Length: 56
Image (cartoon, rainbow, N blue to C red; front, side, top):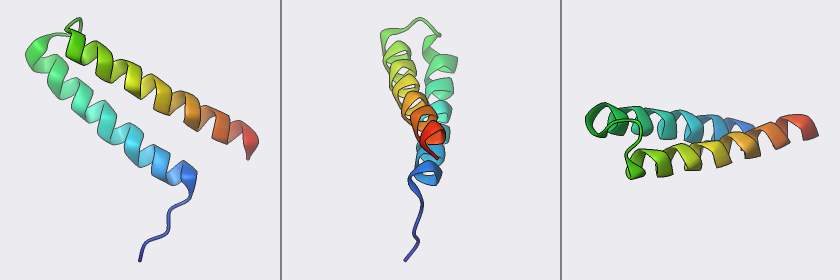
C-alpha cells in the first residue's frame, strides 16, 4: 500500500488537473466554459496546496 502525504497527494491532483485543462484548451480554446471550469478547479487545488505549505 502506498501512503502519500496530503501535500504529495495534492501535487499529483494538481498535475493531473493541469494536464486535463491543457488538453481541453487545445481542442476547445482557453475561453470555453469547460476549460474555465477546469481552471477554477485547478485554482481551488492550488489554494489548498498553498494553505498546506503555510501550515507545514
